[in-house]
Length: 456
Ligand SMILES: [Zn+2]
Image 1 (tube, rainbow, N blue to C red):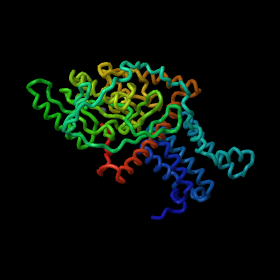
Image 2 (image 1 turned 30 degrees about the vertical axis):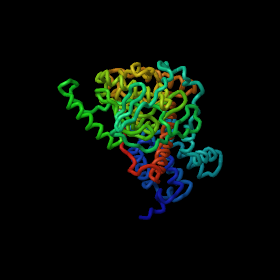
Image 3 (image 1 turned 90 degrees about the horizontal axis):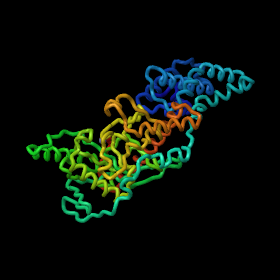
Image 4 (image 1 turned 45 degrees about the horizontal axis):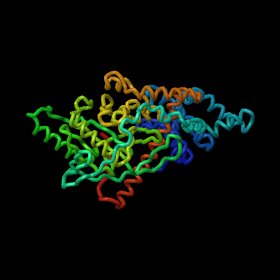
């Protein structure tokens, strides 16, 4: 099917304009709606406009702006990565701007023309240029803001005492069952400096994400011992086949390794965390996943589980030089990127026994999803967490407000900017992942299909 000469697809300049505009719509379904809406409106426009080169670009930008406005301010309430007040201003003035631009083209470069010509040339590009991101001010999120005090400091030395056929013994008493162990794709990811410097490629784990397996469990009582063991082994086998989590700690405190530390496991899904220097996105590549066989809240963690988790955390931190601030429950890092909301998964987002694991209370750390990337939360999350969020969220919101005020912006405007930065960084993360799996498939490592299922 050959596109007609007056359609968008027949002209590269129009395609580029549409691409640029649609890149402001992060959600896939909304992006599709936006493109279809713009194309249909273009097809309905007078063919005299569509046939003239300067006019058709102007027309497309006008229609794209109209569709963005409708998407954002209409009943869809869609997410658009442009500051809302700015978009609203242009959306309201679009008829005037379009008329002026047309007049400018019609009268050449006269007095009206100069203004109109500028608009005609710049059009929506100009709007998008207004949302370029400033670097984060130095010191705005300095280490001092993090209320978490290192309670363990640097973990003391620990070493592998013995490796048998199906178990490892570590010098702090940790035993790791290795019968289910598999290797994962090699780690490769970007760390994004908070100061806005270019991303840094990395290949070593930088943190730990703790999960609740939220799986079926038999009552924790002597009469059910056999059933408990069988349920655990079924679960571990199921997880190992899908390479979900690096470690699982069962209710008797036995630690099973599913994927080796050097490989990628599926566990964190779409997620964000940050330490004093860097932001990390989609933590499967950068963090180690440790799951408790438990329900969502920690009141079902057993004493044996907590003791083993403490030993395992100690070994992982010592082996990989992991900072306390990067030891976090899944509920604190999981996000819904389409809706720009935190807490998509909320496992262990309250009552996590940080102190018992020898790490600082990271509930006090402002989550980077909010302070660094402008994400918000909804009432559903508050309800899921029993009426209140962890304290770091309020700290992050206040930091965001202070930053907006310091730069003379509205809070909404600041959120829009930061969300746009998130989507740019997320694109880079995707590139680093596909590059890593291409290297992997080209023969470095054992051959098997890459895991693509979402996190747990
Ligand atoms: Zn989880």
